[in-house]
Image (spheres, rainbow, N blue to C red):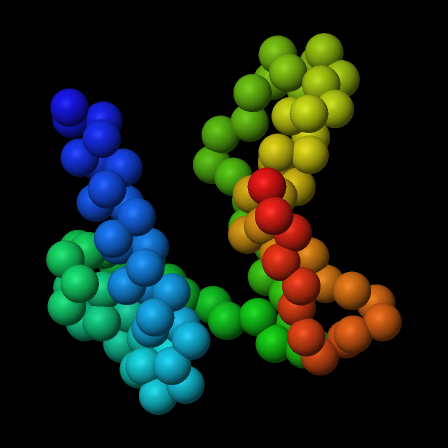
Length: 104
């Protein structure tokens, strides 16, 4: 029961963040005041928010790397790390100004 509730809460939070990101004025507000905007939807954090642009893509380095999986040359793990680092976004060389999401 707890797992379902947690998943439902994460989905609800994800939808709220998605709505903020898609609204230009809300997105700007999130970038200028992330703690306040996230607090408004129930997230207490001191996170720093970076927005990708057509010229800049941010790479996130995971805080923990599974050394055993790296030593085992686990291709699936490397793909997982790559998707995490890029926030599941892939950019097409043909459409430099429009990011294309890569479904998981």
